Image 1: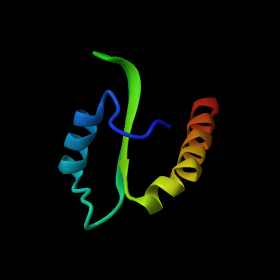
Image 2: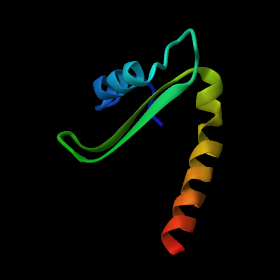
Image 3: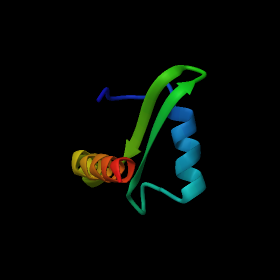
Image 4: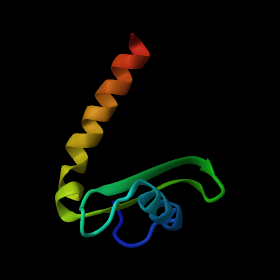
Length: 71
């Protein structure tokens, strides 16, 4: 994961504002874009605890997607 702003950083910031993620409250936003106006990409804005938890969160999400898609 690259550090610093991603190509969809502005959209990630907007999503964070929309859902109420703030530095004071913690949490984070990860935005995955497929076929966007800047191509495929992602942006992540999160506090340290959330960033460190991302691998487990994404692995759980992947397992749930596989289970749902395979029935």
